[in-house]
Length: 135
Image (cartoon, rainbow, N blue to C red; front, side):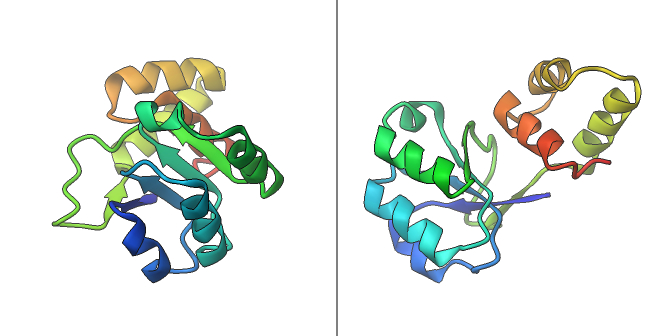
């Protein structure tokens, strides 16, 4: 699974309209979120660092909820945007999720366990589990 990393609001109009998961590495304004939803109509999730997530307005939260876009908290640790514009969730993590699901662990336990072992936030792991990408 790939997460498109966006470093600045100037990148939003140039995004591929088929992007599904986007990490915003800047503090987005309401206008930025509206433009993102318009530019990428197939978007399913927006991930923000914890400090930026807390500053998102209630109106934007409601807008995203109505558009069925998940607002996730988390970061893409160790990612270098100058090398690759996408952060790839490793195959190892995806396999580990499958193993834990096969062992009948709950999604919450899987998210907690893997967030400690991987560089992913539990919100992102729960999103992956909800999309049944690992079935």
